[in-house]
Length: 315
Image (cartoon, rainbow, N blue to C red; front, side, top):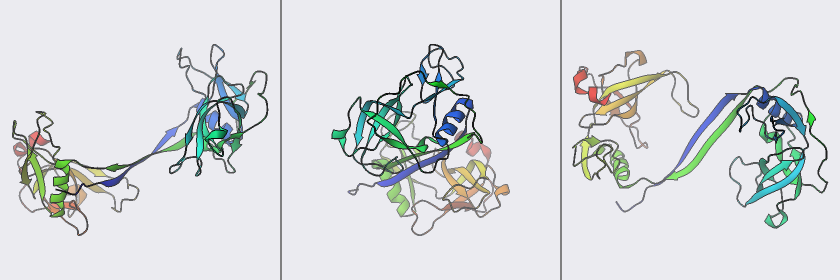
């Protein structure tokens, strides 16, 4: 094959988590334009605050309010902001030790260029116009000419009206995937509505999708073997939660399917049968859709169920 295949891939997961009393107070404070830290047993003021001392592991609850001004301890210039970063124009990532804090907070600094940023420069918080109780309530830092605030940080109860008790932290990874020789051959075969694997020269198992090497023996594989198209359901699960951007009504069944001639089960959706009638040993065949490279789903063939002994090694 002369053409190198590549495709953009996105892995995205919105992680929902609850907050303990310290993190709740910190994020609620940001909503109210108040920056809180926590004092450890030795007097260190941690910003952002944590619930347990990173040195002694003691529980921490001594909240204090620090200033919204501080000093840059180190920085790096970001010439090409990416999706969902704090600013859509070039900016500096900075570690800022807020006045009254002992540790530095990572955030963005709005500056005209890298020549205007330096370690030791004074900055202050620029608050977001709309605040919801998240780190993004700090829109960014901006240069500030004032002197450092003196004195000890003031104690704070951490109590606010309508406290934030949970957050959704979006995680997203965008990248371009380029398959190797074995996967490229597999994808090319799918375009012709065929499924191919590769046979290990040592153990003679046929792996689908092929990986270019046997995961058991560790030797390279090259011999192509066409498998299927029919197969057997080895295990399955019933999906009851609708996935974002997936136009499939729940409930539906997702299964491991051992294609005839393969020694490794692959994933596939089962349709054409009520979800509560899917079972281990069910014989299925692929259903192809124009414009889609892999099978859209698998449906029952009408054959008798496979005997458990014929697929038990693939469960």
